[in-house]
Amino acid sequence: MKAGGSGPSFSEKPTIKQVGSDVIITVICVSQTRMTVDWFKDNALLNVSSRVLMNSTQTGEKHTLTLTIKVSYREERRKA
Image (cartoon, rainbow, N blue to C red; front, side, top):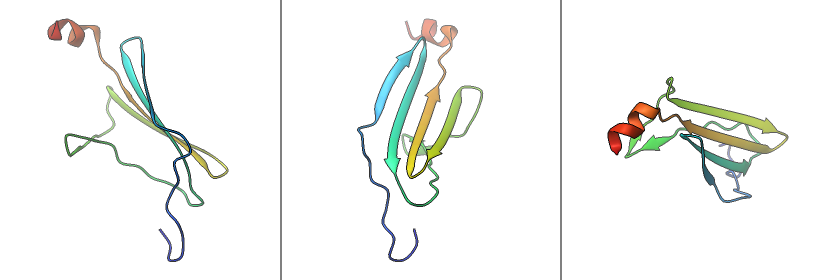
């Protein structure tokens, strides 16, 4: 953040939804500067993979940050 600037503001609560077997977390915030985000699970940094997808879009000052976790049918069966 630049000196004299302000941090992002969160205009909406984050959403968590399940689409099929995928879990999608969406965060919308407002910032005057380009944003980057790191996602963590249990204090460990998540990395993009075939199972973990991260997306960030910007329209003006509105930033939409999305984390998608793909859960395979096989993984679901193991948990049952």
